[in-house]
Image: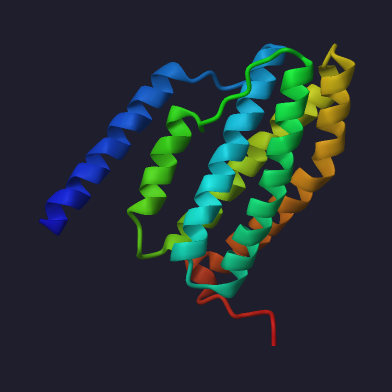
Length: 180
């Protein structure tokens, strides 16, 4: 029964991933797309970090997840206010591709920490590119200022994720707690 449930979850993840690849744009091409993509990335990072609080085994990964939750709760308020001021609809759910990643995380027990950090690092790199592009080329002063103000926080998160990723590499051995 448990095997069948895991197989069904895996099949659902694959189906969602295939659907996401055919539906999702890869870059924000318009102002609305920037808001949409930024909000969906944030929702994924927030939701997956909640999963990490339950499933992560390493204290450093749990601490990172707690920080991501706090950061994204703050970010979510900001982007909703910005979207409202620009008369834009801000998504309330992650993208289909992000939902597929979430399902993958929910179904993992072995090597959860590494998979979670890998997914966060990947999403943060995408966020960095999205926000840098918006900060440099936006024609909307409010969006440009928002992107510029968010970049330092995203860069810090990305650096932390890369550092954890390096520590969690299979060749690096077990992650040792940096706190005494």
